[in-house]
Image (cartoon, rainbow, N blue to C red; front, top):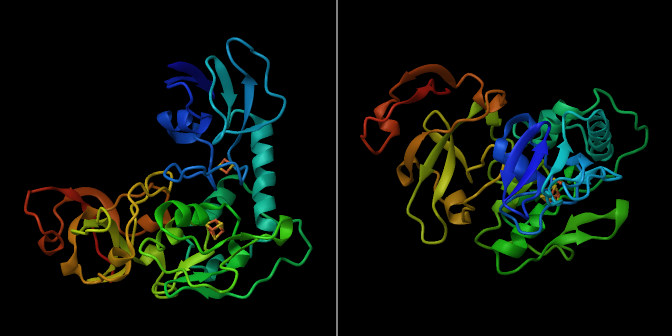
Length: 329
Ligand code: SF4
Ligand code: FES
């Protein structure tokens, strides 16, 4: 085990742990933001620079500071390392620059984007960005295309985090899309308009931090803050069957994987669970999903009193109590 200090908090972690994961052991504000790192995807991270931190002391053996800010998602913590995240003005200034850079080519179409309300870039810009843009240049433009029967690609919104390519590589048996070209010409593409069709392709939508990959069955049918998310499961032979069903009234509008406090899915779900089961009788509903207090998804859904939910929402009668769900009509 080694000891690392982040924003004045000392943490003991296993040797080889990254600064990001050391911070996640404590949680809260000392955790750097991540736009490309995804703990359940091997090799992710190191692309977006959202997670840069200052290493004020390299290690107990060599206490010199690191000369430049480092990516916390891909830098291993050392014994005696001292890291500054929100306690460094330099880090906060650079983060503002990173938001600005990510937004240089990102359209400000949040009012019509399906990802609004659960967009990591929206949250990142809200927490760390400037209120205005200094860019006067035309943004990159791309046609909106269907990549397969389930997914729509808005390349203008892509921040090139590579998470979707890792899902295709690590969860499916055939990757037919990737990042083409270099530098500012880079784009996600299936190249010869090949369709993405495999049992786990829907997870590309869940891992996309922005609205570049959207669900063709859900697009424009609702806003996420009008829906009430419930943890639910079903018996599935392809995946764990553990998902979130998003209800409005009695109707399931969409099914997604369960994201943790860092927006990461631990149990990826198959396309059958995601797109073939929209009846409530297909699912065993476990209870309302809890979101961070500030999330817009909470709006008007839960209050602080603890009462029993309407019985028809549950299949098991184990006298469990949940936070009030007021339902959305
Ligand atoms: S489409 Fe989404 S997941 Fe894929 S690289 Fe772009 S931003 Fe990342
Ligand atoms: S989260 Fe570390 S570089 Fe993107």
